[in-house]
Length: 300
Length: 195
Image 1 (tube, rainbow over the protein chains, first blue to last red):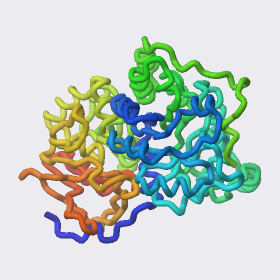
Image 2 (image 1 turned 120 degrees about the horizontal axis):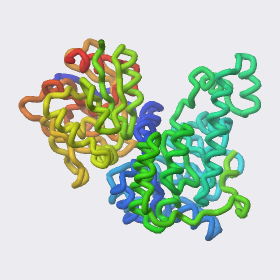
Image 3 (image 1 turned 45 degrees about the vertical axis):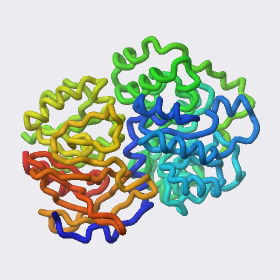
Image 4 (image 1 turned 135 degrees about the vertical axis):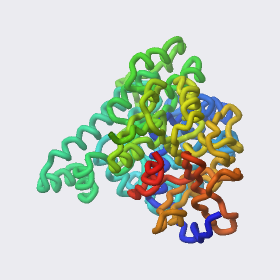
């Protein structure tokens, strides 16, 4: 065996380690689950991770009231049930909830607009944590502000709990469209871009140079069918979060597996057609115009 | 003509491996379906979720033909989840999780703990001069090593036993860590030099 002192200089919680887990989740599906039994169904269907929460967004929307971090015992029961990464949500700005989630050993914290915000001006200082964070964004400026605060994964917000993909498409097109425009801007124009995006100049310049966000970008909010997954992957998302879309459908297990297949084979319409057959009813879905609360407007 | 190296692209960080191959002037092909295997001279199995990749290998009908090619001696390099899939035994994996049995090691998933314990460190590798920057993410650990297996690097963290993290048996190379997340191409070169 090799004679070595390898490991003596090891570091946890580095940017590379935090963003790296997001890289390992690419091309996969992260599923919202509210019980260990659902977590098992998700893992069996090929989910790359589960998001443990008390109520899926559709129920949060229906029930109203203040939505908070889940009960630790519920998160622990899910951690004991599955071997894949377990994520959990903290309220925007609620760093104490995030500290609790970190102490539980969750693999990613979602500072999420689906829960009721705890701070109307400040997001969590995510650099202060060993656990990595994912945050939602509706546009490039919001994405870059979250990255400047330490987010290691961005998800386009969409409109959670609606089963309606229209907002997710709007947000993805906005973020990716502006990235394409940035790559065409000259040096002087980037100062103006930074001002308009309300984002740090350094990050704006970096995106202009590389043509991509410095962290992976996934899509969330409204995915309900395999074709929805194919759509957002073709638009440029690198993975998908599915919240209410699976466990609010008629037959969750086959739908979960079909969305996993469609996310992998998103460029292959025949494959998406094949996995879309006979899945039963998708979640009913909501028209955006009928909503009292737009969750995607939370976050600053 | 340079060799054509397949990169399994069902799920996970396949893009970093294809980038590494292209930087080394080697042709890369993303593998998702059985027909993608036809012309390849070697394969890389990337990091990702091994349970997910294992399921997608089955459902795409790629598991059996890839198993056949590997048993005929197709050179393979597996990182993290890829190491799990090339091992001969997965400890505490899912009961339906299959592996290709191409290197005589048993592997424990998430051997170093959850994400908050994920780490990076410089490691000494037999055959390389300077230390290698190794990034471990919910990494698997090698539990047992068969007599034919060369251990090329180990890691010893505080209070834990020394664990092999880079192993080779014939033309199969596996690492617990992610060389593809760094700019260091030496392990890819080591793998390609055998082709």
